[in-house]
Length: 303
Ligand SMILES: Nc1ncnc2c1ncn2[C@@H]1O[C@H](COP(=O)(O)OP(=O)(O)OP(=O)(O)O)[C@@H](O)[C@H]1O
Ligand SMILES: [Mg+2]
Image 1 (cartoon, rainbow, N blue to C red):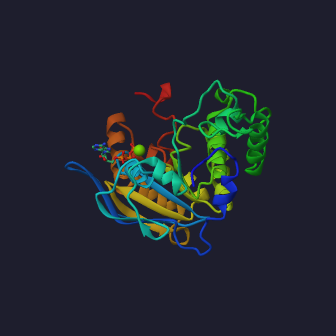
Image 2 (cartoon, rainbow, N blue to C red):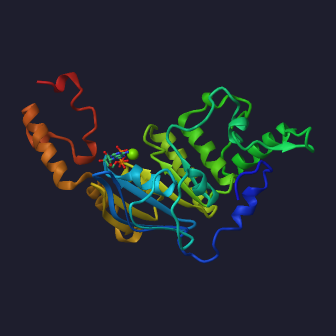
Image 3 (cartoon, rainbow, N blue to C red):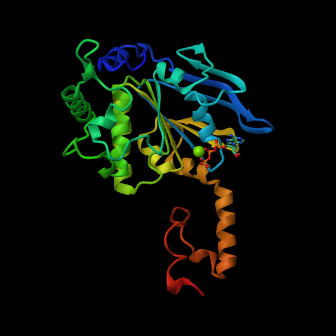
């Protein structure tokens, strides 16, 4: 069930979504050691069709290690990894892709100078005509790319424009639509909003929701509890390689999630440290959420 360039497999794989609500991908007590370093330990996670599972955690928490296991880049060294209820052990990303697990990395694998439609089909071009005169089906690819982008609610003025001229957010959206078209059942997004501004993040979040509505199980990796809470059905917070929190939306509020992410106590300690450095009253410091506000950079603010 790989991409074979006919342009029809997207529809075929859509039917392969399990009718029941069982998880497509599941980790049970999974872990990964790199030699002596235990990057991930005892992590359980289930990805259901039509649901968004958010994986949150600070730098080095093990988020990338987790998705590398699921996307077939690395193998787990403890616990179980199941796809459609069957234990698996992928040795290449191709094997994960064949099971419908697609990963959109932050540094998208696109060719900036090629038109949008060409990038949409990159590596899986549509062809027509009998062998040996098979040739690229350019009209077919343009039409399909346009249709698929529209189906996801993505409207671009001109599919002939080089993909490099699109904004980062738009490129993420094209990558999401592409994964949907090529039959992904599970879509893994590695910090898709990390480098984006508020507005563009909103656009990407909208397409995460669109992929979910089309029945995909989405794994959304992010540092940002606000972004996670806007689209998430389940939240898994990693801390030093273990699950600190695994909760459905109904079990956790945005405030609680933010606290788990930030480590409430650590943030309070940081506030005091900053106060000592600057020699100001703690009460004058902004509230936790505003710690990145430009207080420290304003010229009047410096002693
Ligand atoms: N190939 C590797 N060899 C050895 N240690 C590794 C390797 N990859 C990751 N680690 C370690 O595993 C831990 C988890 O790393 P990981 O990259 O999964 O974190 P992360 O949550 O993705 O962090 P970030 O937000 O910075 O991307 C870290 O301590 C890291 O140093
Ligand atoms: Mg990472």
